[in-house]
Image (cartoon, rainbow, N blue to C red; front, top):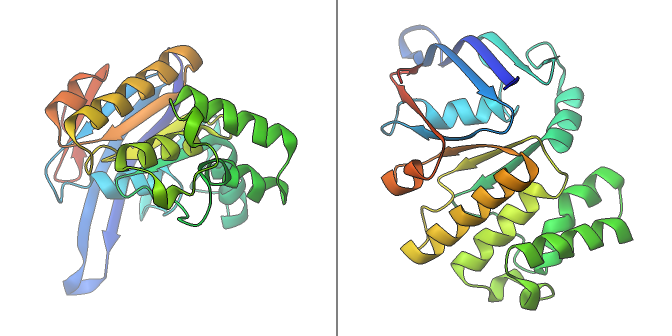
Length: 225
């Protein structure tokens, strides 16, 4: 499979001088188009920092990062914002939904930001995604009234709204019971198979990792397996 993204010698240092902390130490990573990979490693290993850099929300101190042929180190903030909105989706442990918005309004929010307004096309896609997530009867519910598992399925639908090539998920099942976690992972796997969306999923859960096609282990700021 062709490479979706590649990093080379990524270094990220926080602070300076005697207080400097090097979190990434020359990390190399290649993700292929259509992969569903688990990102594993102990707390403090650099997983969250890596996800933040891959999501273009933070730049490394040094190194290379290319995705879809774009040099994302050289890009300025405006270029990164446009790229991120078009090509990258995010699912977080704490779903970060807008509680006073309905499920549908939350899902179409990324497109509304890009277009400057809600459109009929966006609403139709948002509804379709929520139906696929098993939430046909919750489309117009305020998300404050949804269960934890339902909220996370809304978050997955929102991440897919702009048809991104890459979805980054940071402990997406960490706050869910076992049944809800497996349901969310089954839906992610279905999207991966049906649409070829690439997923990189940070997790401490061995069963979630086993559901992925590949396990990437990070330790002391390096990919070790």
